[in-house]
Amino acid sequence: MKYNSSMGLKNRVVPDSLYFLTMTVVDWVDIFTRPVYKHIIVDALKFCQDEKGLKLYAWVLMNNHLHLIAAAAEGKNLSDILRDFKG
Image 1 (cartoon, rainbow, N blue to C red):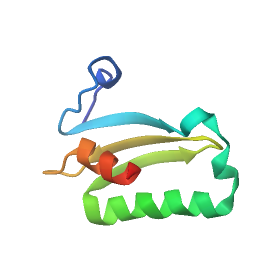
Image 2: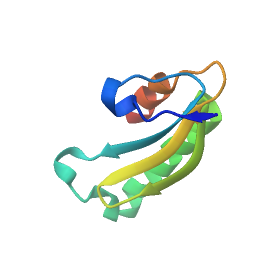
Image 3: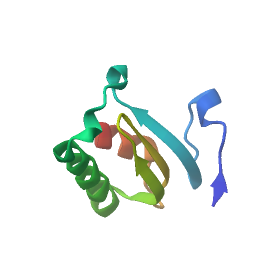
């Protein structure tokens, strides 16, 4: 597996690559200080792993953003997985 650092430059996902991803809350609101919202994110990540082909290598949930080191399983598209996760 190779690391692709060009995603931010070209906003392109290359199959079989590993990505460092950051997802933020609108206006950087500290929403993840509430346990109920933390659990929603964790449950959604687990669902994407089990059902969508998300491969997580590391992740951290901060008060207002999420960092992932992730890839897509073979035959899956990371852009599609992230779209579904955010939905």
